[in-house]
Every structure is written in C-alpha cells, then in structure tokens.
Image (tube, rainbow, N blue to C red; front, side, top):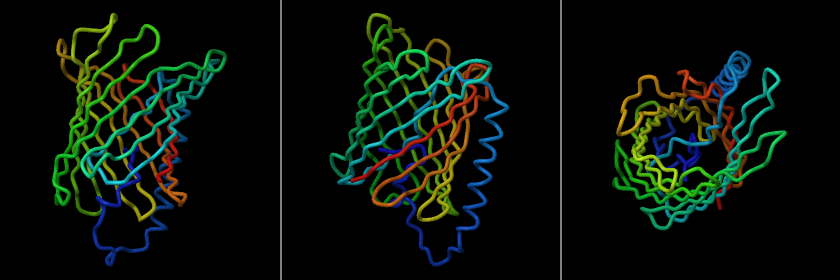
Length: 269
C-alpha cells in the first residue's frame, strides 16, 4: 500500500526528534527548487509515449491499514498533439501484521479519443523481515493483471527491499519479474529494477528521487539501451488521513518515455 514516496513512513522514520532543527525553511526552499526543476524540464523535454503511474514500493505492513488512492499520469501536449492522461484507482488493506492486499484499475484517457479501460490488477504482499529490523527490511509480492482487448494478461513476482540510512534517509530497491499469459503472450520472463532515495524532511513532508529501469528478459538480459526514467517527487499530508504526492519522471534513454507528470491523492481510514 505504498505510494511513490510512501506517505506512511512514520513507522520507518522513528529516530528521536530532539536533535532536529527547524525544517520549514529548508523544506520550503527544497520544494521550490524541486518544482522549478520540474517546470523547467517540462518545456525542454518531448512528449512521452505512455504514462507511468507505478511506485517504488516498500516491504513493510502495518496491521489495520486501509487506503484508497487516485493516481494521475499526464503527458502535456506539444507540436499539435493533445495531452494524454492515465487514471489509476487503488484500494488496499492489510490482512494482518505481515500481509497486505491491493486491487487497482488503470484507465487511458486520450482527448479526442475514448476513455478506455486498460487493466485490472491485484497484489499480495508478505513482509519477511522482523518488525524491529534495525537496518534492512524485505518482503515479497505476487501480482496478477487482467488486460482489456488484445493485450496479454500478466503474472509477476516482486522482491522489495528498504534500508534505513543516517540523516533521515531511506533507500529502496524493488526487483520485478513478470511473465505474460494468454493467446498473445510472449514466452520470455521480463525484468525491471525500481529504486528510490527518500529524505523525510519533516513529520509532514518527504522528498525523493525515483528510478525505473527496464532490464530486458530471459532472451536478452541487460539494462544497456533499455528504457530508463528518473525524477523527483514530493509528498505531504492535508490532515485527516489525506495525503498527496507530486512528481515528474524524465526519460534517460531513447527507449524510455520522455516525460511523465504525476499527481496522487490518497485517503487512509
């Protein structure tokens, strides 16, 4: 039930607060710099081929959690091309202190075209590390996808990792293996690496840098020449269990989407 920055980091960022300095000015400057970079890059990058509404998930589960979330992926229109949008609707809940389940649906929205259903997904997460793990937290996740039209369905296995670092930092690495099923499915297993570095700037805000890398498949493994996106994000809270995330991703390689603007809003209850 994690978001790109995972607004539920309170359990993971539990260092004493007595040595903190006033973060409001630092956060304000950091947020302005982040948004300025995103705005500048918006005008110098091209149009992406698809929207990325995925996250760099963490492996931890908290008993009693329930959350609904809306995610928007937006590619601005340029050179006479209309803007493209992707909408994602999530519902997740913890089944116990060690397991969680999520279901979500993706919809494509192309102005001048149809608002269409893309796929329906289910995820089952198992936290493997001890609740009080001091440095490394890990877990596994099983995914299933039902796609619309001629697109194949998909099964996935995920290995999720998180490391607690000094200075209110966390690092994540998310390894993914997927296999298509159905009449149009490929025979290979596809691989992906997602990673992030998260700085909890205050009790209410976090800044992060995210990376998404295509690692090829069992017939042609390796990151060289594959799709690779990287970009910043900021997340915060409106109170009453309502959280938000704003970020952008930029294509580093020719095979990656050039640009994605992402906005998410969630409600925990």
